[in-house]
Image (cartoon, rainbow, N blue to C red; front, side, top):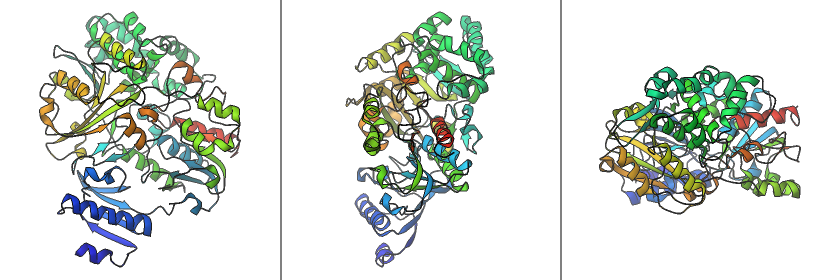
Length: 560
């Protein structure tokens, strides 16, 4: 009755204190539908205090409310859903220097770079909340917060753009653990020396491989995080390049003799989403290890959405604007602008800008290749994961795959379009180190494995078997799970075509021809159109550098 009285006169502003706390699932769903209608169709603003307990079967929890603007205690938030006034892009009439389509980390980085240069910027986001892969939601139970895509910010502390932002990050004591069947684990410590000491006969080899690279990380990483060009530190790049061009499988066998060091390199190289026999996969492993030692692989306090919120705040302080709920179907519908920057992979670019591009360029974009997909699980848990090796409880990220041979076999199968029986699994346990993610005494976790692009096979059992293998009793702790096959990942984040979380295959050919072979891959034949997504160098992961380089390209030409 109170809700009916509050909404009957179609108010412009509704303040609600835990409006669904005492309602059953059906009534909650009906109330949520009513509030969404008030907000989206009638332009009313909603400010919700506390948890909005959305029933998972309603589907509403995937996209609404749009924005958490503050919190009072773990698991509780002040949620504001304020209309963007952009249900139709054509409603935005004010002219801007630049319009950015997409508000993932690359789109926001492009917008911030332009705004810092004094240009007026508008960011249009199709979803009801900004951030792209930087989104956090209550998926399963009130008080449990899950990251939809990215959790571990491996490159953030060593990336030129993001490391200067004011971010609230949390570090686990060790960046990474990798357990074995005998109950032991190899751990990547922040110190190269401490990591090497645990590698036995490979200690000197690990020091020799990593010490110099980590010491020069702040010179090396900025050079590999961009397009092919003349390098300012050619000697360090030459050493890295000679090693990095090797297949990871080959480098592991050449550099190390023991099980632990070889498996460690295989696990980090598998983040490339390629067979470990592919040339260049060693570079991925080396970059990930450099980032672990130099930056620590942190997570964002409160969920990855807090990183996206920090970028939005920075843009707004510079006078820029983000409007959500604005699906761009054609560049012709954009407000007046001098330059448009697209945080879209080629599939999306062709959908919204195909009529602005010559046939030859369209055909080249159409040949862009996507890599394997991901199959992801989110869990709410009754306690911490019971690892056989206690060292695994010191790391936010745990690699589950056993030996080099087993990991290489798993990734080889995926690269050939098959599903491995024992997939290599990347697991993250954020609530061990960030207590805002789950109620006291409870935990959240997620894990994923690689599958052929667009796969519809359910890998739930295979993933949980791998966790149980190294943490007996894990299944007994599961309260609820959320299953994310490639199709659901793409529906949530359209740039993840077929579940490809890297935004495109990251092999040597496409690393340098991304999205097409060009000295300036961010520019297009249309002088007012630029690409700022992970489909440009340096590719996938949370770093924002695709956006930075695209913005610089626009500032050198169209926005000079």
